[in-house]
Every structure is written in structure tokens, then in C-alpha cells.
Image 1 (cartoon, rainbow, N blue to C red):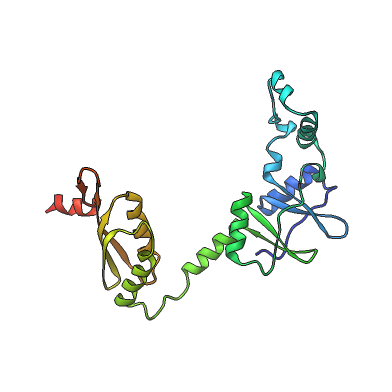
Image 2 (tube, rainbow, N blue to C red):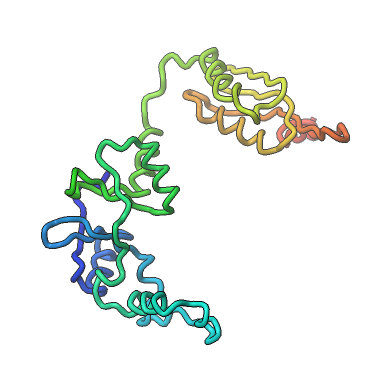
Length: 236
């Protein structure tokens, strides 16, 4: 997570908040009150519908009959408010320092949000963003490979990764030589091909994956070899 969090207050002007985002190259800001308590989050999405740039909502007059006065007032404030407190998202979703990574990602997906304030009790101590997750993935890619991942280990790990999946190819055979993987078997859905290849590619010390999976139509019995095998056949 990011520990040095840039924040604004509810009284910060919209212009200053936008300038802060641009100068720090960030897309959102936690909003804290004078006591340092988190009271909201303001993001680039809060600036999409603004009167200054002519993007406020424009409804046909008859649609106003189906929009409550309260909602219209809220939209008016959001489009013309001059302070962060008038446009921010209140009571934001938060996580704690001990939240597991899996739960953190689930919260982001469920709430369709890009950033999560990290709390220690009532105090804001950090911010986790999708960029932080991307950095974590990049960091894992640089980890030292497992020294025990010889060909037999590679084959066993791919078999384990695919073996219990409903989409696994029928009659799957995996051969590995010097880190080069060959996948043989039958599939009835081409998405199973890609999933099997991804499983192999994600195994430590795999240098290359060759696709020999054959697609079969369960109704007609028609079959198609992999693109790779078709290319070899045409070249020979």
C-alpha cells in the first residue's frame, strides 16, 4: 500500500483538489476532517459531470417527471458544488492493515472501486490502489524460480493445476523436456485450450508451451487440430 497518502478536506475547493490530483499523478484522494478522521473519498469520476465543462446531465423535460426533486437537487449540487465535501463519496469502503490480499481484491470487485483507504482503528494509515496490485504482480514475476522445478516437477505442477478443473481437456497428456511443455488431449470448448495454456505458462521454469489440443464437436464428431499442428502439417 501507499503510506504517504495525499489528502484533502471537505472545504478544499474543487479546483485545488483537481490540481492536487494532476500534480501527484493520482486519480483519487481521501477526504479527512480537521481531526484527521476519514469522511469521504473524491475521485476523477466525481469531476465527469461538471457544469464548467458542459457535461452536466441533460434530460428531456418529460423525464423529470420520473426523477424525484431530491435526486435532481443532489445532481445539481454534484455538478455545481465548489467544495470537495459537496461532491465526494461519503462513508467510503475501507480495509484494515490485516485484510488479506484476496479479500481486498474481492472488496474492490464487489464495489467496483479502484482504491481503498487502509485504517488502523479510526486513523487513516495508507491507501491501496489497483496500481499497487499491479506492482505486486510485477514483483512476483521477478522472484527467484523454484530450484526443484525440473521437468518432472513442472509436469506434476501443471497436472495439479489443471487436473481438478471442470474445463480440463479429456485424456490430457503433458510432456516436458528442458522446460518446454507439450499439451495433448481433447477439448470441446476452445476456452479450455486457452485456460490449459495459461496454467502451463504460470508454472515456474516453463520456457515455452506447445498446443497439441484437438477440438471435437460432440454432435457431428468433426475435429480440428490446433493452429500450431495445422501449421506444421501444411509446412511438411
